[in-house]
Image (cartoon, rainbow, N blue to C red; front, side, top):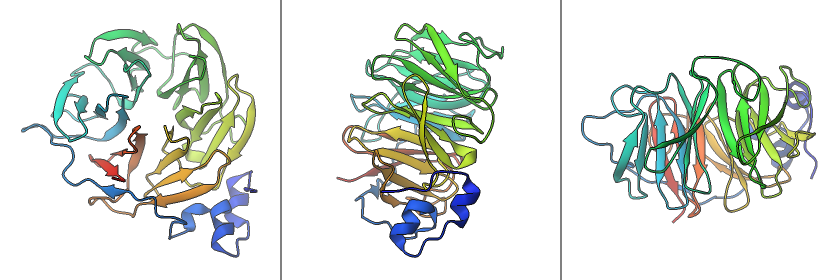
Length: 312
């Protein structure tokens, strides 16, 4: 299947005579999903402890033991809060630590990565909240293996590598080995292939390919594990968050077009759900997405919401 691969200006003017053509060119204009993905909102999830409230919810993650993490910018509750699948509160941490929370990721060892884009630091925690490692120097910007400039996200490679999208300041991807030794970087500011306007989220697939959501440019760029540009998806909308899920498909959240989209490895859109608004099940301001091994989808919203969608 062919997809338009080029500047957004070309995408916006490419002719599309039917829904199938439009899905390959400007999928955000298609109003009805090509298939029902079967997801429904889980009402009144989670159960926030009494007296707590959420600020901008910027990150969500799920580990292999079905602990569901919420990362937010509010002052009336800890910035990292953990729940079980039923929405029961488990534990929390991080008061007074982070300058500006951004994303959260869980690795295969059940550890938790928290990205502080305002502090230019990435923190690695145990599931119990113990700091294991840090990447970067808090309050100090730079563009090398020890410094970042407003990093946005982290992904884990097929051979144990780490990839940091960095980010609002540096417009690069920084690569580290399994021991967090710096291996190099790629990318620069720009709209060309292999460049970034805003590398906002990052994920990897089972083959080790690296997928970077260049949010402001409305595209996902695909690279080898060493950073060689392969292709880009310009037809999917504005990707705030992207994740390669346990089911072998990609899921993006698009806060401007208010939808979650399911995509195969070729870039073909299999379906989507969501409508505009701030009510239950509506997906405006969606900033991040996580998919559990049981199929649950979590979405983080800048208007202070977190939502759980289930296909059970």
